[in-house]
Length: 111
Length: 113
Image 1: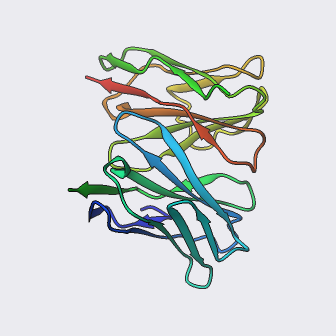
Image 2: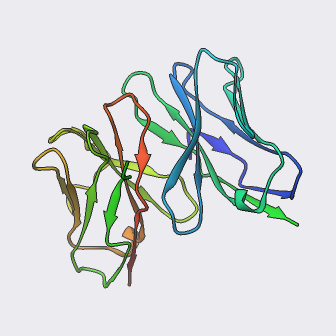
């Protein structure tokens, strides 16, 4: 199974906030990433957080990190139809910096 | 700044045939990665290059997959012979150096019939 776990689906109404959750395994992970993948496209880096931070905000995106529980979340404020995509959480391991991805959360924005 | 380029974008082949994918990383990025993304899963690393040397190929099925990065810039990934289970999107990514953020190309979608 995946070392990084995410819920598979999220449906949200346009204008509401979306929260995507992720749990990871390596307590020594240095960086934690959120990538977005639209149909037929590669992975687009959305944001990342360094492991010594609790929170990072970037425009409509807020990342929260709970190191004790190894839990990462991505909040998208004022969700738009263009936010419909698959969102991947990834941990960057501290020993070799490889990325380990979750299976992705498919976010569907309904009008 | 140009992103990671990959070609072809789509490829359909029959099992036991050969196929090759090409990747051109972001200029100045020393580290290049090839990932396999099977439908419904996250990307899984196949091989990592630092300049023209292999850093990690532990997850590369070496009986049928090969990759090279001869001049430390472009890279090719080859499958010979292909199996049905090789149907996936093959993603190339690059970073300035190992521990830095990876940037992904659009991927090559391979269908093996």
